[in-house]
Image 1: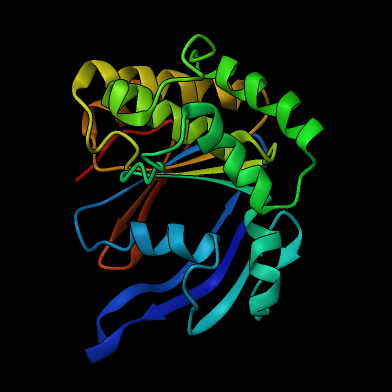
Image 2: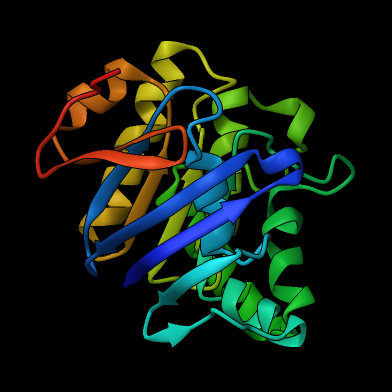
Length: 226
């Protein structure tokens, strides 16, 4: 599903995002990517969705070699990947239904398909009774659920969640992680980028630990090491 082969990404002034990173995430896995601030974990997430270019190596996503992906092909790649970030990025003047629908409208989906898909994904995240609410009328945890619903709208095989609980209290954070586990049980590969020790240790799933751009540990059922 996700293959990195000797991937290096450097920023200005020789700051290293990733250095010679190789890893293989199998379809259906739930993997936590952890590390301190500046370890390279967000860089890894951005490279998966082709938000940034890398300097050396090779990246394959779902059998697609994106090493030299053309700019025009990036939207097609991203429609195959669900993305959830710490910043909700919801449209404040659109309802929850309209926020999720907008992602499908941009992709050119028909009105009939949108009317079918949106209620389904909002039900998955437990917000089927709040479709007409606006973002400022729901809690932070519920806003993150909308983001997840939006990410699921394209039926992605891969979901990348970069610090999805960073702005949430512990109770809402646990609910979001439970939802990600549920999505994973449906067969979706989940890559969770986080610095939350408690969540990582609770999951007892595969843990890839980064430090200064290097993979320093890859545990099948691991814990937060740093």
